[in-house]
Image (cartoon, rainbow, N blue to C red; front, side):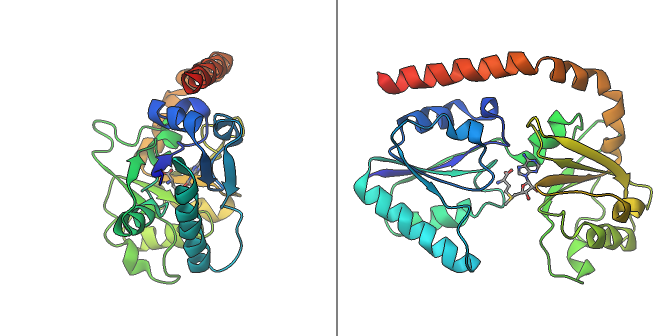
Length: 265
Ligand SMILES: C[S@@+](CC[C@H](N)C(=O)[O-])C[C@H]1O[C@@H](n2cnc3c(N)ncnc32)[C@H](O)[C@@H]1O
């Protein structure tokens, strides 16, 4: 009987994994991974491990989820180290909490390895701090998946300085109009960060009143609040990050070699 590790894969770049996550990937017998886990992170998995891409499964969400749980149990019966790999932090909108509760309830030993969530890391690497003294004293991370036509669900969040909205691309216009109806100014700055932390990152800046005028593709993090204006002031810092991309890639490669050596010991 194996141990099941529910592991956060971070926001994309392999050098934003935790050390513990990288070590477990190098030791894994079986890995079940989601759609948002990057190819760069999957390269760290021990060669020969059984790989299951459960992000591409089609069907009703509940049936897919039931199949993932069955597959996890099946892998844990046959292997020692089973990794359930989920983008960002596994328990921030990733159903990691439900998987953990279900498996633990069935008597499995389950470890949760937190990950760097896109909610904070994606704005940070795009040059947007989610809090800033004198500008934003707090932030909330909210799902954009809500019942269509129900602005009331946003009432609890409209007064918060910075809103970080995940899975909000499809409903962005409705979200913006609800926030304005609930009192946020139409001029409030908004940023969408697509494919954050990766080389395909694209940042679109607009305002709440003009959200309908911009094209955005998922996956993206939507940031609403005055902190978005700080991004321009951080321009030098962002350029430095771009310039150092090779250094970051080298650090990643060194980590990979280290993880492989640890697995071989
Ligand atoms: C199901 S949620 C999972 C969040 C994840 N557990 C985390 O902590 O980052 C998926 C959403 O996270 C956001 N997301 C995750 N990774 C992202 C990235 N690299 N760039 C932009 N958005 C990302 C998008 O809003 C996407 O729709």
